[in-house]
Length: 277
Image: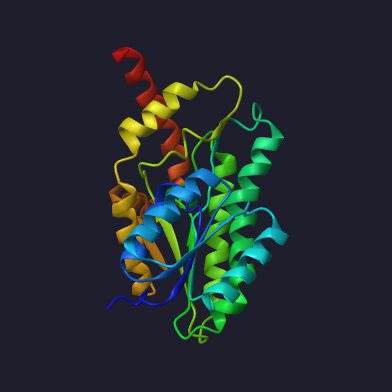
């Protein structure tokens, strides 16, 4: 029997990508679901898929950066589903561009969704989770939360922040029966890059094509299975994809020296693409 059977799981970003795949897989495992997303259409589709499996679903349209909205969503889940056992804070967004060329609004949006929205999600539901006999908090960092790369300073900042937040919270909750698992996805086949923001001068189409053809090798459904396996075991960290595992190993082996390596590799790949083009 799954540890999620009969339990209540909250998922942000449930309308697409890893969030939707988690919702469907948790429905298969017998969980009751509180699904949250700012995209009403995507959320409705996800809710229908889960209900078709037989899951009880509470779907709420909410922006994770809205503290009042998150508090209301948490209260509704607690009241209508009878508590909260697990929280999967999977909502996220991305921006590409140098700091010099990026609009401050785009940078602030990434930090607001990926860091503040995740913290709001956890904070709003934490009291209910601590009353569960089987509580789990699941946060989503990234391989970009292990090493930084040029032109992703906003995304890197947000994902490094999630990593620090998760490690601190895991220590705070030690002995309470509530575990904290931080997930580090590599390239997953989602629409995050296609739906992201870009600084002026960035070749959006080329970046999207490069991500979808060469980087995004893990399907969301596979990612969800990996995540849930680690969460069931109450692992502190879960790496999704061979690329994420490789980045984790390299970061441990070479530490801060990667900061000279990454730009050099990027320049080499850029020259190869120009020659092949």
